[in-house]
Image (cartoon, rainbow, N blue to C red; front, side, top):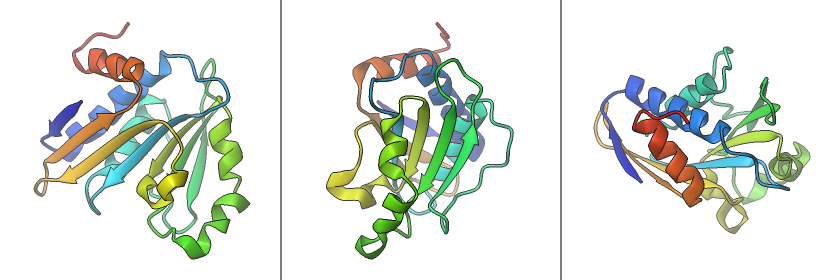
Length: 166
């Protein structure tokens, strides 16, 4: 699926629709719902995450956890209980142990967790399975966005973007 957003507000609204679409599909057994986000610095990843949080009914301010790797927000939903926002921009081979110390593997293995990973490409072959959202900087406001992964989730996201909500 390929999209272009024309403004930060539109990018945020897209994030909200993605979250709403993901909430109507049941979680996969033994795995969190994972959105792997990749792309340019300044490409709109955190803006998209703010929209995802809004779609999850999170009212706390969403800021990128660049220096602490992750933030957890509780969710009041039938099967999702936590939203985890990871920012791996500063992750390198020397500090991957930090992920182990914060329980990354456990977090991504619990179906009650909704997880967004900014800079997931830094995990290399250890990137967990999930949707891959790539954001490309087109100009100051516009972003090219591609979403790849599970066809059922992509179909649900497309129907939400087309205005359907069931």
